[in-house]
Image (tube, rainbow, N blue to C red; front, side, top):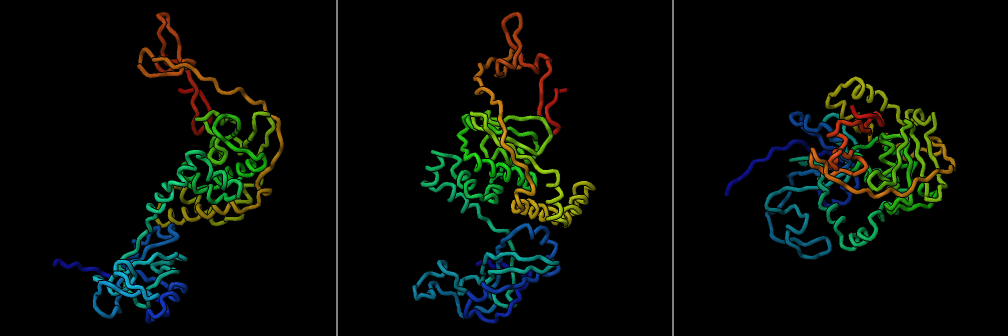
Amino acid sequence: MKTYEFKAIGIVHNPFETTEDYRKIKDKLSTIEVFDDYSDALLGIEENDYLDIVYYFHKSEGKFQTDTPTSQGVLRGVFASRSPKRPNLVGVCTVKLLEHKGNILHVQGLDAINETPVLDIKAPDTSMFAYEYDNNPVHQSKLKNNPRIDIRNEIHSGRTDSLMIKAAQMHSHYCPGLALGIMAATHVMNKLEAESDGMEDLLAITETNNCFADGVQFVTGCTFGNNALIFKDMGKTAFTLTKRDGKGIRVSSKPESREVIREAFPDFKDLYKKVVEEQNHDPKLVTAYRKSALERSFGTLTLEFEKLFDVQKVKVDVPEYAKIHDSIICSVCKESVMKTRALKKENDEYTCLYCNGSEFNILDGNGIHKFD
């Protein structure tokens, strides 16, 4: 039978010399010393809150046995247990990463004793758990009847951290701007006791098209696609939520809100200057910046709402429900185009604005402007 050779990449340090009570080991802190030859492989590891540690049972006594009694006396096959008497003396444990300094990892939850050789360290894979949760038949049936039920429950409970995680799946990153949008939208949704069904009965009017607006769209359920999001190109961190009766609430960031956030997270400013403004992309610096940005983003959610926002009741001129327009085929590019965005020619054919060489508006990071 072919054999394989493994090399230790590090070693465990803690006060435990035996496995008589592995539960006590897991409750205490351990350090993992990664050997110098592998220390560069720790780059970015602090972006993980949890790690999978693979290690060698260097003090395991006795030969491999197919079954083993559990602590309750129940006999189980060794592959259905965590017994160290295995065909290959390899253990694995998920730990919480508390701190990373140089080549040292401070962890909690490790069940390995002192001087245990570490074979590998991995970021944990939770994709199967997420898949099983999302595909739970009972929960799926609820989501099919109300796709926003989880979001609605989190809004009502004020769980902005959970909303932040879900919103970032759309926004693609965490930032204080997204956090502010989530905070503002959650506050107003609860104030108005509003629900969104995507049928234009609830309208959000955003005055900016930056990160803040994505937080508003996600929490309120008002988007460009369902015609419930209105964009005012004002360049202000503000938005209004209103029902069809025009009685709305406007939330705007206070002039001092940026300074409040800066004072709460002073380390971020220097890292932002180096990585973003000066474009210093040293890997260690980028990792530190990402960690600081993450802390600042979620930390913003914990700041006092009243220190960040002004809130006022407003009366809104609510537009009519969006009209449904016919589509025609452009005689040039042969693509389907909304009839109101096409030009009719003398031969009763239509051309889209692009093929006709006509001006049209575009929305990008600079706001709304004519396409050049």
